[in-house]
Image 1 (tube, helix red, strand yellow):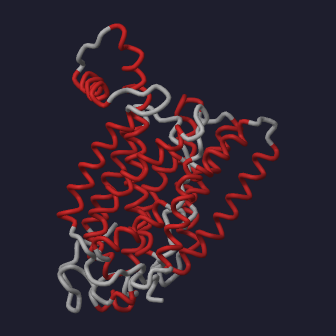
Image 2 (cartoon, one colour):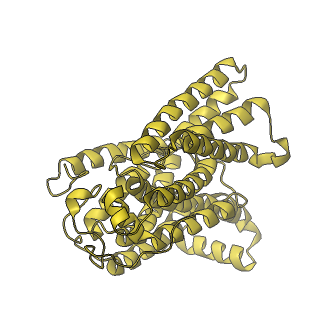
Length: 374
């Protein structure tokens, strides 16, 4: 379990630690904006984007009609007979997909912030601990063997989540020592086991006579929302919401962890216990997200750094903004994925990499921004 919320400790300002050279991805000062300004702007932008993106695609629907169909779906209202097809496209196909994209983006952004503090590494992302690779093994194994038939259309997602949980347990057992979970052991164990899981996937696909396993492997390695339904949305939304709330509640603890274990101990933080709780929480959120979307790179790596530039490096500020930024980003990425090469879908990981790589390089060349203090 995570420890109770810390009071503002000595040597740490009410807004969080001020020694920016010791913090992963620290930006000078408090940024040029406050969450009180940025959050309302992002909320409005997200609501407008959801409306526009739901109406966009091979069969475009005007925003006014989209809003009317959404209201009819929410309230059980009536529509005319000639609108049934467009209503089904908007309500049954696009709406759960867009909302799922928003949930996944929010979850990846928040977990990226937490993992970077957890392992004290500016290059960490939600997948550095091997959870996504384990989920991919579970998804491919279910596809090849036809297991979990009782789960019906959700069998692959359930298999992916079970694979993520198994990967989490293996990483925890392999990385744990008498000193607890140290950042270096967590990262090394996660990376090594990721290679092991990838090898398992390769063997399963190679030995399988069914080409569907190869397609499933591609999906889970690059990401996509093509399988989104109203049934897959609620569990992911709940897990992401609870995860974001818990992480924000312990934002001061994350601030303290970035100083190192010795400093954290002097401030009354049991870093081993705290890191274990954070590891379990981030792994559960990551597993739930990967189970419905596959592995989507760069969202949890780049967005936390961009948000720190805007609002500063204090985790209370970053965790208030990053989930909304992630949701907004992922909604538009999903639109691009299904329209750029329509009627085919471009894997989400391709788009996030095309955006994330140049942005990350630009961040590294930005003199005012520090990665791990160097």
